Length: 164
Image 1 (cartoon, rainbow, N blue to C red):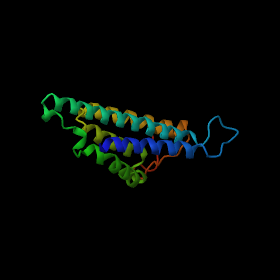
Image 2: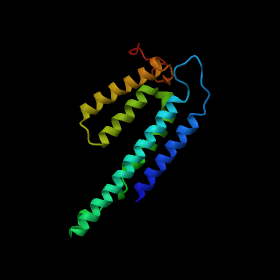
Image 3: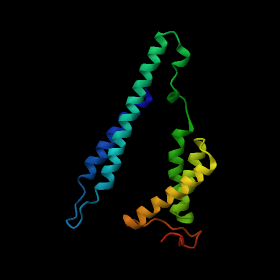
Image 4: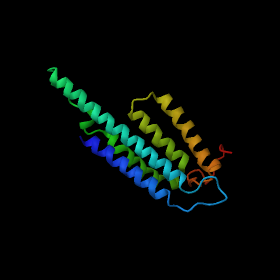
């Protein structure tokens, strides 16, 4: 039942984010304004909350059917158990905040993605290649396309020579 309430909470947070973002001032020279990214995040919250709520309700229904059929051992929902999946995103965010100024955004994102993939039992070579490629793509999109400056870090001397 916790997931139902969490999903509803995410949907409410998404709606509030979208409503708040729509009140941001618009710039006449741009096709999109400062409300675009928060609106996308709010939409993602709404979609994620709806999926979480529907999945939790479906799991409860499945557990009830299994109980009626006389198989209560399968009725326990895995979402009721405490797992690392609930704790890792906030830890990753705190790690990014603390480490990105020293390591740089790209290296910090690579480390986070690599560790998260290893914890999800991804093969090491797949996790390494995917995390490097995706963090490079994220860095390139944010720094070159969206023109959002990301920390380069002092570890590499403030420059990333392999990024054009």
